Length: 522
Image 1 (cartoon, rainbow, N blue to C red):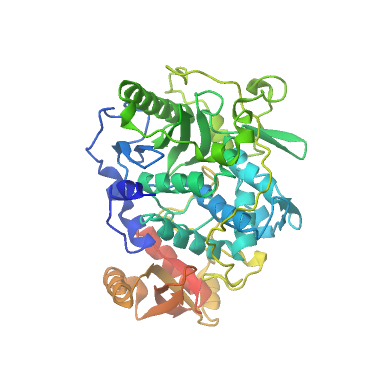
Image 2: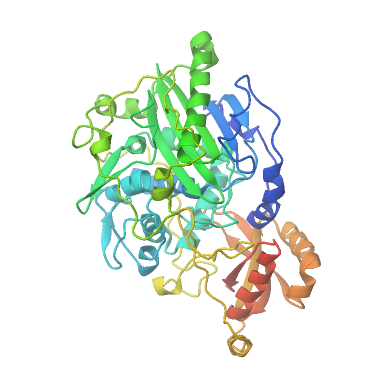
């Protein structure tokens, strides 16, 4: 799209590695962009200043209509699943899979923290059900099932996600898991998320209507979307909500009125309702400006309506089972208090509970779309399925917890947000540590991946200078590998270690604010 450079131009500085971004993110987060459009600043208290960001664009040509902290580093939480679905949509569009293709559920996928569908290891889930579970339920076990089905392991799928982000121009986004579960190295920006939303709408108009799904049923239970704008804000077509403690309440929205497509992001809400109020306020202001000056944004045929004219009526169709959204059961998680489902439903005592709508018309709740599988006339370029072994995992078996371990400055004692990644525990006693350190030294700690070997060496040197007391005489390793897009990248690593030693060293570095993850040598 010719307008994409307008969004990219908000910030063109490419960060060298995810770990360096994560290490710098606390300071970056505290520095607020002073630029505001005519809409003015956000309402005081609706968003957390350390997590806040907002961006409104003309979805047709990516013209920026409002920007606030749009290039500050933020955690995506379940907005991560937008990219998980992008890679799934690629395979649907190319004909590699169909909506009925069964995806096997591993132990690793089934053990994910809530929010989840409580899938059973050894079972399967059809692709179409998985899409609805991601959009409506934000199910983490389903996200990992998709990741393992496409990438072999979740950690390798995360590399594919990051490579696709670069291909789309999302230069500030790094993925380490498929779900958005807490990981300090999983970062993005509002401007990158807008680019992804644009690509989802224009690259996959035949699947985009799924984002407006208000509810779906699975195994006799009905789940209602976390996106409160669907059915309550005129023209809202969904896209994705997200929440963790580190991110606050996030929302990416698509809104269509009068053939005007608006894409919007709000990040860092203090509660779901506060986030929604801020989103509605910014959208209301945008449509007020459009009414005063219709030339402000382009008029276009909405891509998914053009692709599927038979769905136009359905998008404003019938009510949910029982006649109203209130009559649909909102399933609460068992034994958890901080996953996305309960967080989205939680009442904040500081919230004034003002109505979500202001100067908008509330259409009837929309039904879940029934989209027929269609083969495109021109197939989209697709990343080939990679080898079934991923860096950072001893093998591709589910029992090996094939993923990049979470890294965080302070270990958390209980699941938070959409759930923690459970890093492998370190031995509790020194004699156990000594025994664990006596194994094969075929592990390293990785600090990032870079476009050229000189940059990798420079970052290793800078990292070692800050951490000599922990790294000791560890060797600096630059390991080339071929990314999924065919380009050669260079992993920057220290080693070799035995597994427990690598994890212990990385844990110590993480506690002092330096990011890394343990990985096997290749």
